[in-house]
Image (cartoon, rainbow, N blue to C red):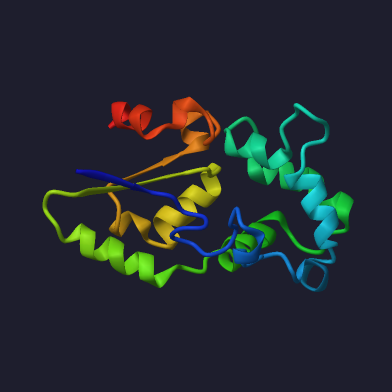
Length: 167
């Protein structure tokens, strides 16, 4: 049996589709980097026009490099600090593990008839952070993420059936 887990809102408590369940990583951006939280949200996460992808969506699909995008964007927002410092801050502060889910994953991993994978909307830097720094590679057989696959997570091409064809 193959079981696929999502990351954000499941394994990591941070962003969640339900705003009441979110644990924002960016509440101290003004204090820590000189960036207004709302300005960053609008510039990075919101599409510039209807039918267009936001900068983040472009990164998630693998169309743009996160650090290159941030290198161009952050100075326009008055950022104090480097892109690498900002990315490290973001990833670290957005890594609140759901220990209950981690425990279930560890228990499932002990069973011989179960293969564990995770499938997620990520760009390559965070996917690497999750796999290596958070050591998800010790829990899962493989990571499938949107930028690696070149498709948005909400498309048919990202379905578990499609992913299984790549395994």
